[in-house]
Length: 358
Ligand SMILES: Cc1cc2nc3c(=O)[nH]c(=O)nc-3n(C[C@H](O)[C@H](O)[C@H](O)COP(=O)(O)O)c2cc1C
Ligand SMILES: O=C(O)C(=O)c1ccccc1
Image 1 (tube, protein in one colour):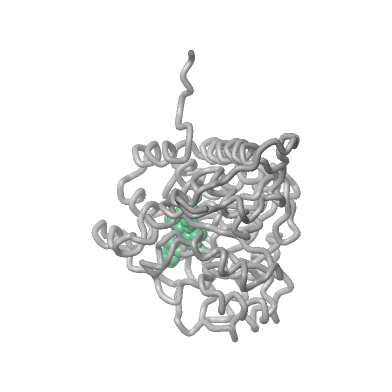
Image 2 (cartoon, rainbow, N blue to C red):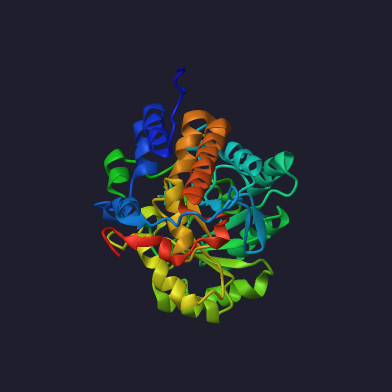
């Protein structure tokens, strides 16, 4: 039998990416904060959770199409925002955007991208004129600058703002310290930060950012606002009360506060707190179709992937990202079928039990 060339799952993509990348850049992508307890916990938690399939349900093949925040998506998987795609591949965010648009999934473009949001949006639209692009924002104490960035995202046609709220300071990245990696290499800039010179060191992750800034943001833009990085049910309740449109249950891939719980382990309490009022997206450690099914069962409308996209990009640019997305799509079809589910909306809570649970 002819063997398949290239990685056959996300884990193999990571290994291939490690071979392809400058070790300093690989460390930047792979690392978590401090002891990387949370980064490891995210994946470990999915392995601990078990699926209990239903049988003889007589269903057809599952359809994966669904909506998140009113946006149609070809599957319940989004691209989480990640900074600095140019470190992975010269195609950078343009390659990622083409792959996302080609696969019909929402790309959440990072404020700290190495390609301008206008160019990313233009490229996505060449592939699919209805391609969905959301914009991730770090609210800056300089509100004038923050507003300028929001206006650029709006003008580029982004259809939601993802406000990252788990970053009142930057997590302590010790691999970066060891490697002396604190700035982009020459020739690379944060193209959404042109107004402040394009230097990532100009970005302020400030503990002064508060719900008042959210109210201000609500007042200056009509875009739906999604908070990224909520882990406490009380914050989820406050978000609903403040008119937030969606939440990403996330610990930033373990890159901010180390020793937070695995994000999938927080999903049930957050889902209880919001009671279906607003959609939830889960990210952190999603590496398999079965992981997506677990997130759906525990209350998410969709999951999102960060590093898997970067591994695909590092291995083969747009084609590598496209391959990662198609592997996850095929795994998701297979997992839903084996679970006895025919759509992302019909994944019951009792499909998931703790390891050894009843
Ligand atoms: C290299 C890298 C850069 C990231 N940059 C950002 C960022 O600029 N803004 C943000 O909100 N989250 C950022 N994240 C966090 C991701 O959006 C996401 O929460 C996380 O990667 C999910 O975990 P996973 O990598 O295990 O899929 C970054 C993650 C990585 C790995
Ligand atoms: O690396 C990250 O996870 C991230 O969000 C970030 C934050 C500030 C500067 C560069 C990247």
